[in-house]
Amino acid sequence: MSRVEELEDRLRLLVNFGGVVSKETNLTRLLELIAEQVKAIVSCDRCSVFILDRHTNELWSKVALGMQHTEIRVPFGKGIAGHVASSGQIINIQDAYQDHRFSHDLDRLTGYRTRSILAAPLKNVSGHIIGVFEAMNKPGGFNVDDEGILQLISSLAAAGIENAQLYEILSKSQLETI
Figure 1 (cartoon, one colour):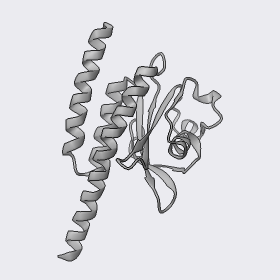
Figure 2 (tube, rainbow, N blue to C red):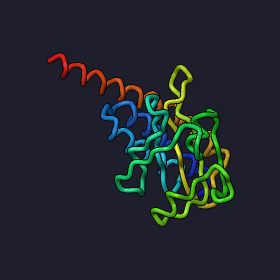
Figure 3 (tube, one colour):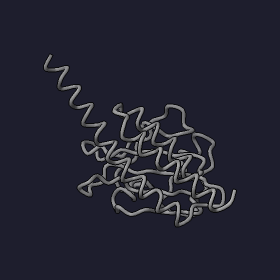
Figure 4 (tube, rainbow, N blue to C red):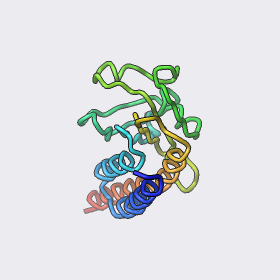
C-alpha cells in the first residue's frame, strides 16, 4: 500500500471513528468500539482502554482486545498506563521489556509477548485525565504519525466516554426515582 493510500485509509477510519463515538451511549460497548477502531487505525496487534476510577485511584480496563473478558487494574502512577495517567504525556516505547515501567506479569499470565507500546492519556474538555489508551505491537513499531493520530483519537474518545458515563448516571437516577 502506498503512503497516500495509507493516509486515505486512516482518514476514512478517523471519520468513521468520530461517528461511532458520538452515537454510542452504552459505556461497555463504547469502550469495545473504541478499542477496535484504534486497533484498526494505528494498525496494531492489541489495544486496551483504561478508565480512571477516582475512588480507588486505579485505572481499570473492562476492554482489552485479545484478553477475552479479563479486567485489568493498574494503580495510578504504576506501569505504563499509570505513568501516562500521572504525567499526562504520550509514551512511545519500541521495546517494552527494556523499559523499567513495564510489568511483565500480564505477559507471563497470558503467554503474550509485548514488544512495542504507544500509550496516550484520555483528557476531558477540562484537561483532566479520565483514562489511558494503550496500543501494542505494531509491526515496525509506532511512529510520530501514530502518536499524533492517537492524541486526536483520545480527544474524541474522552468526550464520548464522558457522555456515556453521564448517560449511565442519568439512567440510574431515573430508575431510582421511578
